[in-house]
Amino acid sequence: MYILKNHYFQPKEQSCAPRNLEFKLQRSSSSELLNSLSTESKEPKSEHRRSLIFRLNYSASDTNDRNRVKSRLKKFITRRPSLKTLQEKGLIKDQVFGSHLHLVCEHENSTVPLFVKRCIEAVEKRGLNVDGIYRVSGNLATIQKLRFVVNQEEKLNLDDSQWEDIHVVTGALKMFFRELPEPLFPYCFFEQFLEAIKNSDNNTRVKSIRRLVQELPRPNRDTMKILFEHLKKIAAKESVNLMSPQSLGIVFGPTLLRPEMETGNMAVHMLYQNQIVELMLSEYNKIFSSEED
Image 1 (cartoon, helix red, strand yellow):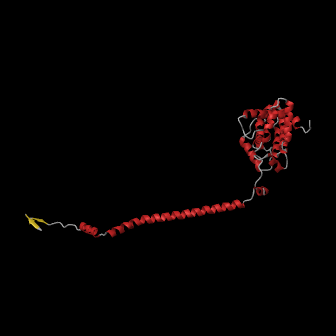
Image 2 (tube, rainbow, N blue to C red; image 1 turned 180 degrees about the vertical axis):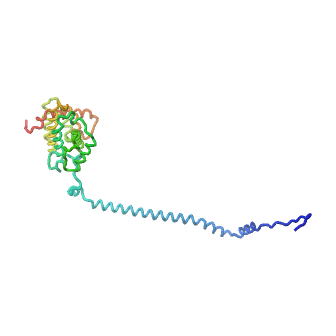
Image 3 (spheres, rainbow, N blue to C red; image 1 turned 30 degrees about the vertical axis):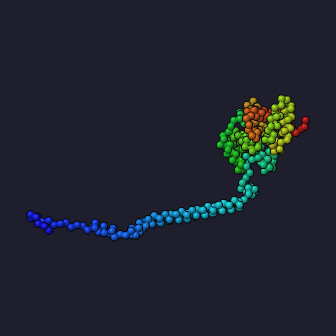
């Protein structure tokens, strides 16, 4: 302590903390620093390793699950019953709409589908005098409902109130013929019918078409005969229902007779299709008569 003019001065004590820190840093060897750094870097590496192991285990588990699913599906497919077995047990019923004509007839043990007969009976019972019969469209949703019922149930009552609109019945009948995989006039006969209708002599046309009709498969010929007989009755009421043979030809031509592959001659084909139906209605007795000329 120093005295200067009655003032006392005492030197401040220097903190030893910096010196201690410096001493510690000086005493720390390079190996200790490396150890501390390696300790800090080990933690992320271990976390990464655990994450990788988890992903590998999950991937292996996922692969096993997929293999088990494939194995079960394979067993199911090999053990599943055939379509014929399901049909024999009544679990799957043969479709009416969208099936080949001869298959429907074989299933029903007939040469004319029962649905076609029932529709014709219903129309002749309450639709011969209806304006625009077969030309006017019925409610599509109701037609689809009728289609579903026909495909799923064997019993069908077209006198039921839900089928009260006769245009629904005619719409369903046209849909049946439109959805045939092969039309009522088979594809292989299309060009022959077109060549027949092109003949300028009416008698020659009638004889040619009659010959072609007789060559058709039995289901096609019998179904065609009952349908055209029905349409002939419709045309006979032309003064009331306004459906002439020409009008019916326009409605049914493209539905009953169409080429397997559409070409650029669609408009020309449609004209001939209509004319064939019109001629077969006008000359029904000559074309479908069982008597030979």
